[in-house]
Length: 261
Image (cartoon, rainbow, N blue to C red):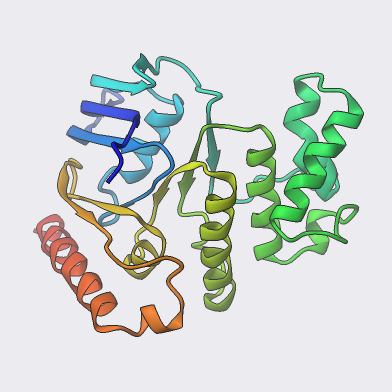
């Protein structure tokens, strides 16, 4: 096996929120190396600090202790090399699909012809050809999330940070988007850190799975996903798929019960 290159290094990171009336330790001594070109899913019970960890990787908030490194450089502010995709689509309703996708490039003063070339590439990649001039209100939820993904990709980040991006979609659309993400990641060669509370989704998408403990969130267990990609219907119905789901659920269930005590 070829040696893997670390792109993100999370080193003994802790995060405490203190608003003078209540002190919440969200993440404690979390460490993880993320390799270039892989898709890591972070799973855990509600409130375990998954989203907090992602926000720290994006530079939206700083850790109370520990370090986060991107290419051995500490993340100390909003990091443009990390593109964030949220559950909410966060599209501009008054802009078309193309205008939404080109927004970041326009802010960088990229010339119009170059913007159009980039948007054409990602409109095709996410399967939105023919909808370039449509507005978000004219699109389904799955299509809106494709626009959000294309907009981030158009800015060419090294890493995609995805915070439960498919949680609001219906089951069939969610499955399509999972399949599309695997395809797009392979095509774009981006590193992806994907937060989800859905164990099956983690098994479908991941190269590795980081399971967090109940709050304060620590790295409870790190698993390599041995299942072949793409994980089609035959793989999803296999005994190996079911066994990996059960293995993850047993760890998560233990942490959920801890959080209820």
